Image 1 (cartoon, helix red, strand yellow):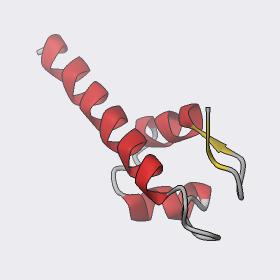
Image 2 (cartoon, rainbow, N blue to C red; image 1 turned 90 degrees about the horizontal axis):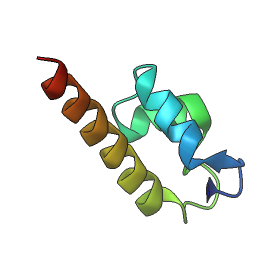
Image 3 (spheres, rainbow, N blue to C red; image 1 turned 90 degrees about the vertical axis):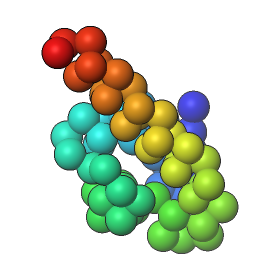
Length: 64
């Protein structure tokens, strides 16, 4: 699903960015330009970021 229409950023783009080290909205903005144009995607992007971080944390707990 598209999260940022201005920069054509998808949910999977955010997931990939998190897997490659983005862990804050600033990181997403720097890497994907999310929420830098109109800003309407910021809330949804933050939700996707938090879900991706939680998913990674859950994977790490299962591996331990």
